[in-house]
Amino acid sequence: MSKKRVAVLISGRGSNMTALIEAAKAKDYPAEIVLVASNRPEAAGLARARAEGVATAVVDHTPFGEDREAFERALDAQLAAHRIDLVCLAGFMRLLTPWFVTRWSGRMLNIHPALLPQFKGLHTHRRAIEAGVKQHGATVHFVVPETDAGPIVAQDWVAVSKDDTEETLAQRVLEVEHRIYPQALRALAEGRATFVPSGDEGASR
Ligand code: GRF
Image (cartoon, rainbow, N blue to C red; front, side):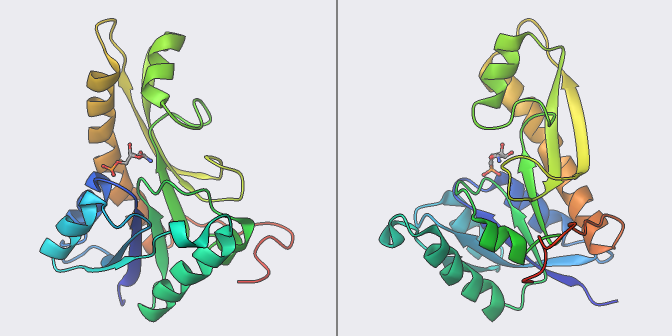
């Protein structure tokens, strides 16, 4: 079976991107990372991707101003040029419009540093500590128009200790992220994780 062609979208350091690139080096891995794209030209992950021999693309969102869809059309053109099958959001800090999400519905994953549906949004580790939860973790899910929602593909947790700071907790959760994202992408690429949106959500694909 031919390997699925994957684009990883980043905005920053790209440690999850690196975990996916590493996992995809295995002969039996069903996907290859063929493109890393960033909306930020200075994203540190771009250099790492290049060092790994992965093609990179920068689609800076700033010239597009408030026209999110125009930015996404430029991004989508890059995905098309690289014949991308699947998209992994990995610290990609742009809200996506229903146009883009619908286009990639069932073929796009995101990783979120919390046990969804708990702690959607930003600053999840700080909020977990403040809330006094005993368990915290990370989730890989299909992307749907609502932010940090969508069917869960993989999730794992760590115990929160009373000595944890935002930083120590973030570090342990990151280890979970690096483990579950490659597992989730494998499941999607092998057809073991599927999501077919109901109604006309997926109609324009
Ligand atoms: C990760 O914690 C991820 O869960 C969140 O953004 C962070 C990105 O980190 N969406 P990295 O760029 O993958 O290192």
